Length: 333
Image 1 (cartoon, rainbow, N blue to C red):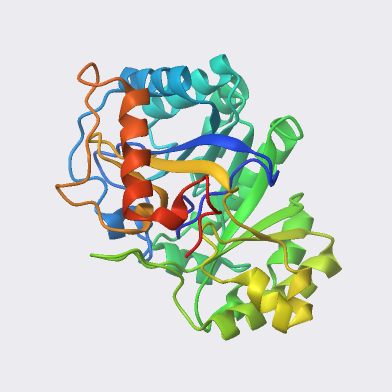
Image 2: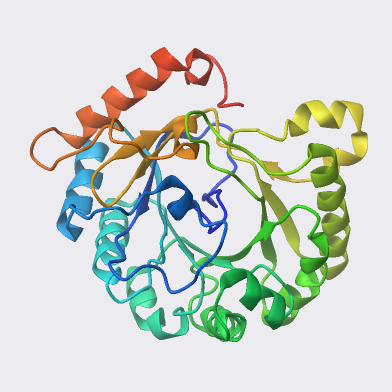
């Protein structure tokens, strides 16, 4: 996930199928930023560690034995922290070995220092979080002075060293009533060499039920259309990530044709999403927008084949949420 929520994923192909495996990697000292909207903290995902880097590699290999894997993504806390790097390397290297697309979501502060490793691991895509066109706003949002400058330096160097083999995108959180934080982003992105921009409406995690976007949908669409126009002027492609179709873009477009210009990306119909946290607990489908509780199933290496474990989660999801069945319809909210 991005720091606010949705995961940038590799493709938009409607015919895509398979398991989308996403990971939260351990960070014993916590994240280097203090974002108030952090999904990892909302979900209480890093309460204890248990899995080792080699366990993540085993999880991926065993999952691939039972079902095609659509993609792998590391989403938090921050995969480029020193303590997190062994886990990041295990996931990325296993994906590369098996020929699976890999995505890394980073806050960008440590990106410049990790470029030699990234050049070796060759992720398919890196999404870098940047939530304002100005340093003071971004640093305030992220809770660290100097974060904006370090991220910009990291982006510039990444463009020079990894592009175009690795696709690069900037991911931004759209806060309710704070669209003006993002108004200058398209021009900035064009100036630093980025032509792909992912906008994530702020998400909340539910305690006992699936969460969703924060803010009025009408206002969200209005803000997104304004940002879309700025992106067009700067020749930057804007994508709105709306994994489970919480915004109801297609239905809204029937009433407001102007909304058809928005490129809104949801999870492909035949792709199942799973989210594995450091202690082995794993959520599936829309349940990734609920808090992790003791009853969330836990995978233990060698206790159960990972492919069988994921099949069990998939069956539970289908029985508890029939309309999220891949055989019936696209994941929707």
